[in-house]
Image (cartoon, rainbow, N blue to C red):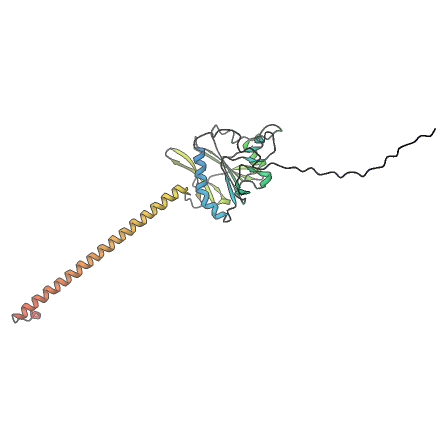
Length: 286
């Protein structure tokens, strides 16, 4: 009895297709974690910082390539939910990036799309400051502490913690992968050398505000303050001009009065001389 065997023909191996990984961008990630702004000063404080530093940044970036975030998320790690992989500094500045993406303002700042870390991040303390100083490293399921994220993950060169309730300001500089607490200068300010500015506190109406100064110690004014200062400068210039005009008018009046008085004296002397001559008296002999 004959047996038949079916011979299997070998098939060529199919090429393995490389899986394409598509990471989410700022439009696909949440732009808020749903938390409330923690105190009423945060928003105006952010506006003050942004408005007053704008002229400096415009000089530093004549091409307009920089962006400022105000309570905006920085995504540094992929997690579920996505918000666990983000931190939202109250204020931060990123140099050398386009202010717009595809013609739109960013909804968040995504490190795996941008590849440029902020130069400085500022946090406004609302509680006891423990959240802003939290050095807890990340786990697979939990968020890392803010301080750890800024220092070890995002590696932001300057980190500033402002506690307006306690009139306290701390500044850190990233050196050798660690934040080193900065010392204030003679003016009590912290120098942010790459920006050519200083940060310090100013008391207005009993409230502490975080403000910028230039390297010479001149307060950087907000847009409203600049408008007021420019208006006052115009008024002062007009007042000086009016005063100078009044002085010039007064000098002209005095000169005119002196000229008229001289003319009147000369005419009076001439009349007297004529009268003397009519009497046969030489005026020069009198």
